[in-house]
Amino acid sequence: MITRRSRSVQHPGEKRMKLFSERSEAAGTGDLVRETELVISGVLRGGVILSAAIILVGIGYFYALKFSGHVVSLKFPHSLPAVFQDLAHAEPLAIVALGLLVLLATPVLRVAVSIFAFAMEHDRTYVVITGIVLFILLFSIFVVGGLLGHGAHAHVLRSGLSFFVLVFVGSLFAGFVGSLVGLGGGVFIVPLLTIAFGVPIQSAIGASIVSVIATSSGAAAAYVRDRMTNLRVGMFLEIATTIGAISGALLATVVNSAVLFVIFGLVLLFSVLPLIVHMGEELPEGVRNDRFSKALRLASTYPDQRLGRTVSYEVTGVPPGFGMMYVAGAISGLLGIGSGTFKVLAMDTAMRLPMKVSTTTSNFMIGVTAAASAGIYFQRGDIDPVTAAPVALGVLLGATLGAVTLPRLSNTWVRKVFIPVIVLVAVEMLLRGAGVL
Image (cartoon, rainbow, N blue to C red):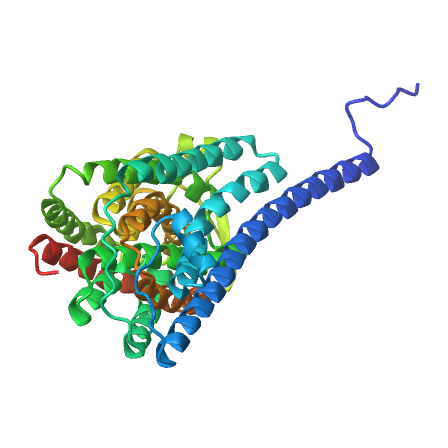
């Protein structure tokens, strides 16, 4: 007696077709993710190139007029209408200011484009998350910035060519180190400008904000392209950092910043201890996704040139990491720093990401955090084009060189570089709190 084959048993050909279909679907999803990364990288790279080109034109025109004997006005615009008004009169500092504005706008544009990039992936969760970040960012720039961004300090004390060259060289170093360890370079920029050149602290902090965005845009373009940045971790945590930045900017009007510098300097010094414990750790061990990480799909991979393989990693400690990011954003708004140290600490110690991923994702995020308060500094007249231009150009070049260097380094080596830098940041905060800087 011949019985019919059960319908539950698949023909081998059907199995192969199903497997091929599943692999094709997975490949298609991978292609969409790759397209998302390339789109975001392209936006960052385009913003960097355009802003650098405009700044170079403005600076070249400025010094050409100065050396030809023309009287060059050192008054610079610190509102968008004033920039366009001065551009109509071919004022060189207005051209430089326009280039700086393009640079400051690059993180905002990156967030806006990311919404469409995630939509290409049909990733509704991150379309919503990125939309929230963009709303908070625009609210900070146009609402909070409009309320607090008045005062017009507008200091221009040094405009010689030697000043430009020396600040450029110092900023190149700051951008290089900053891109390696996930900082904005302000830890070097502020002392360089205030101590070496006597630049007022307001203009130095304004230049520090520029250096943060320049480091983020310059380095992140390469890191995102090379798939070393965790975009989902960055986008999700930016909700906390942008809200924190607004809170900090509001608190800065009523809180004694000197006391805060001392408190956070001491906190940073104590934060070095867990880093020392994990000093020799190349990759985190025993890390398992928590329920928040699973829901948000934060686990990922990155290509490690040093190890010669693709490293898979999971993410834990999302709630404490999110809380630490809020504190990092508040510090940025309060003290006018990139707070990349706190971001790296949160991802390395609380969320247990590999050190390279922590630094590259911090680089990706710090520009957005800084952009949340950049509008305030610009409208106050704290972003002086003569000072900020060499900072922006030097940091952009340094960050690009750092982004080429980092993939060749080990996670252990990056941590060894990060520890002395974090101690330096802590000492600088203590000195600023004591009124030395």
